[in-house]
Amino acid sequence: DAGVIQSPRHEVTEMGQEVTLRCKPISGHDYLFWYRQTMMRGLELLIYFNNNVPIDDSGMPEDRFSAKMPNASFSTLKIQPSEPRDSAVYFCASRTRSNEQFFGPGTRLTVL
Amino acid sequence: GNSVTQMEGPVTLSEEAFLTINCTYTATGYPSLFWYVQYPGEGLQLLLKATKADDKGSNKGFEATYRKETTSFHLEKGSVQVSDSAVYFCALIQGAQKLVFGQGTRLTINP
Image 1 (cartoon, rainbow over the protein chains, first blue to last red):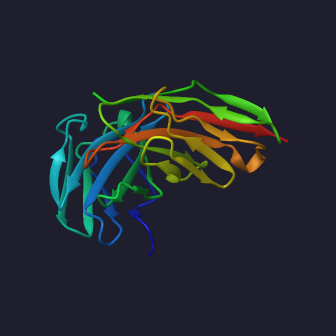
Image 2 (cartoon, each protein chain N blue to C red; image 1 turned 90 degrees about the vertical axis):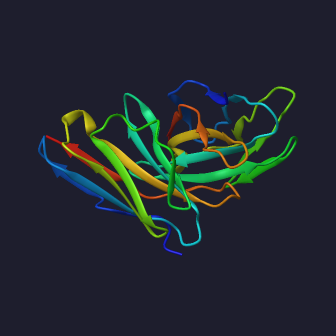
């Protein structure tokens, strides 16, 4: 299996622009997670899905952030409009009920 | 709620030294426990796990034993290498809930 796939790996954008991060989970995994990692705040869970349904979005920082999972093999995290404080590495992860969670390589976002 | 506390870093050791990174947890019932490792520029990878009391997880020379009496899951390695330099995260999960991570411990091994 190819593992969790994220795109793009790096994104540089200007403040105010819309940013869309993409994730393809491991086939057969029914949980999908979006995390954000920064030096200041560490690893933060933003939102997670079970069977394509959002379960807990309490970590989403504000209305500028939204996430969707239209099917079992694809999810997006969108930031609109982006701000410099959104600069971070964003990770997607997936797992089954067996609890072994696999992380993608991350998207490094820089907002100028 | 559930929580995980790790020893504060950063930790710096010389090659071939003995490593311990402390991890304690707070949870009701019997969570599963994990150690994840993050190498520079990469995502987190599962290093080892234990699903019940007294279980020992092991991988790549690392070990951790699930101690319910002390609510601990300390990570150990007998002889570290430069290639072990990374950030290590302790984590727990109960049922079908989300993983709860510790804050991470940065480890640097000097040759």
